[in-house]
Image (cartoon, rainbow, N blue to C red):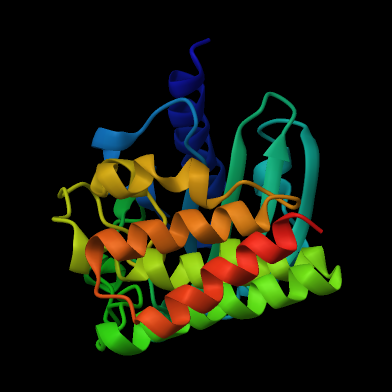
Length: 258
C-alpha cells in the first residue's frame, strides 16, 4: 500500500478503535493530517489529540490497547504526562496527546481537523483558545549583537579545543537567532508557517537564506569556516560593526590553522 494511503488509513482505524472503547469523545488530526492536508506526504507523522470523557484520561494513558489492537508496535514510550511517541512495525509513526474535554481550554495547539467524534461532542472545543507564535526578536540590533558575540565566543571555545560547545555557539545558538530574524532580511514566502518552530518549512519560506545554510553548518571540525560564512551573510544584510568583524575574522583565521 502507498505510504500516504497507509497513514490516512491508520488514522481512520484509530478513530474506529477509539469509538469502540465507549470512553472517547473525539479524534483531532493536527499538522499535515489536520488542517494542512495540502502538504501531507509520505514523510508525514500522525500527529493527533484524543479527547476523552472526564475522568477517563488515565485509562487511555495506562492502557493503549486502542492502538495496539490495530497493529503491532515496533517501539513506543510515554514522552509526556499526556501522551506517547509510537512507531508501528509498518512504519507509521505517531505523536499524540490525550486530554479530557475540560483540559482543552488550557492547551496551546494549532487548529486541527476532527477525524471522528461522538454525536454529542462540541467541536468548538477543538478551536484553540491560546494562540502561539514562534519567537522573533523585536530589536534587530540586539539580535545581531547576540549573533556576532556567539560567533566570537564559539571561536574562542574552538581555540581551546572545546569543539562541541564551539559548534553549538556558532551553528546552533547564533543560527537560531539568525533564523528567527530571517524576515528582516528576506521576504517570506507564504507556506504553512508553523505556530511553534521557525525552522519548519524554512527552505520554502526563505529560499535564498536557506541556500546559504550548507556553508553556515559545516560541522564539528569546521567551526571557523561556518562562523565566517555566517559573518559573510550578515555583512550582506546588515551594517556589521567593524570592531567585532575584525575580531571574528582574525580569531577564525588563527584557530583554523592550529
